[in-house]
Image 1 (cartoon, rainbow, N blue to C red):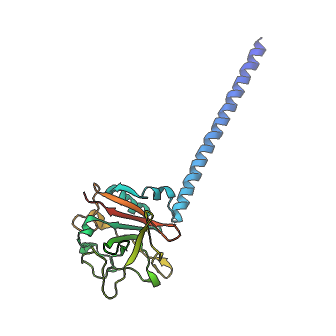
Image 2 (cartoon, helix red, strand yellow):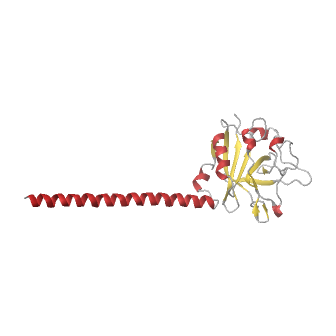
Image 3 (cartoon, rainbow, N blue to C red):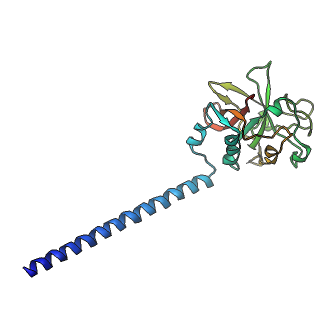
Length: 225
């Protein structure tokens, strides 16, 4: 009888040990899977890609100023454009002289869907290109940007709304094969200039695409309060 009890106890110990080993194995697998997923995200980020879920957040949506600022941060350094039209920009307020880019340029993209109501957007992050490789630029720092700038030496990229998304045909501006970027966004935090984004404001968000339907970025237009 004592031997049977001893054998039963031994079997119980073995089963408990086996359960512990199996549990440990699952734990290691879960940790390894988590690390692998994180590694995948890091690789994706290093390759400059953005998940489709991020684009869904800006696909024909009404978003807050906080989300607009988050969009600028999310796409920073990646090959996507962020086009922003604030109410101040619409009303002709200039970019503050202290926020003019070191190269003297403020990149402008115009919505030419309606030729009688052409609207200008400031182009942050990856800069969209123009036919023949020209780089869009305002050319006259400190002047109002409520309409597309004109004049000698000034180029403006144009886009059109098609089926709920803006479409632009000429890809990104490049110098020596490298995409041109404008990541100077300090003005979005400063009141009194065309770039300021209030966290309490609302924006109409749409996607920017190429003619094949590939995502090129996001377009944000502040709504009247």
